[in-house]
Length: 298
Image (cartoon, rainbow, N blue to C red; front, side, top):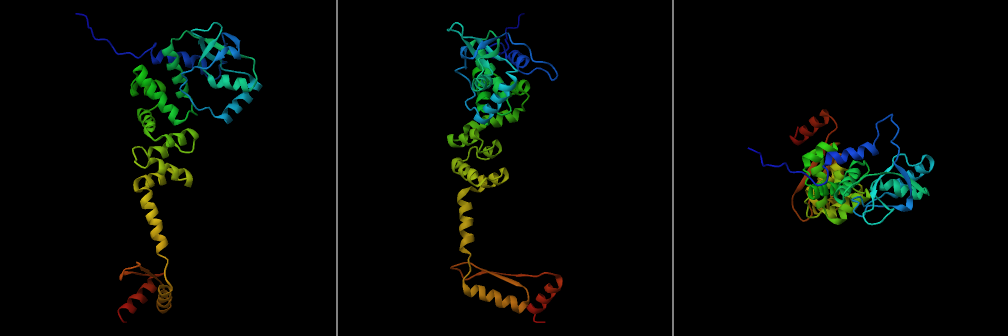
């Protein structure tokens, strides 16, 4: 009897196979020279992938890469495919940063490796290459994971295994995509870290909290506290602190009691109330004994 059950597969040639193609050409082993490119092509005959998942390119980082390329050339070739409709034109599959930096460095030709990829495989490889980059911002990273899952049927477990990322990391980064637009912009610009942003996920006042965190330069731990108590309580606490400025009579009484006891006396009298709190501070146990004797009439 033939088993009719078929194993569910993602689109293209499979994530592992595509990863193999990318890593073979982009990341040669330490100590080995990079593979020779198939050939060089004029930079104007290469164009970016219109479905490139990476949207943010750091200008300073591009300038640094361009300076390196101007001195040493493009060490790692671009992976391209022949354009599906334009003869003599190549579409970038992986390596758009190197292509952009090469133009800044005013290179006329760039090294390329030509691969035969379908439209779906081009997108899949582009996402994989971007996710592997350490400087990819959390929002583009999360969007890449989500695309791999939605378009190609990959699970979080599969991504974790192939990309070397923990499943919890993948899940947490994807959750960042639920944040308001303004908060996501802070993440893209590097004004907020993923740690800060995670404290705001699902918060009704996430945007205002994010604005406050960026403005004050809060640590992640302080951001966690802020997310729990909210801005209203924080402002109330500050207002209450300001309202505890003491009148002249209270200050005079504190001074008289402190002089009589030889210890610091503090009076906290809530405005508009009859009650309050009186605190006496002692420096050592001898002073405590003196206070006890005074209170007992000794």
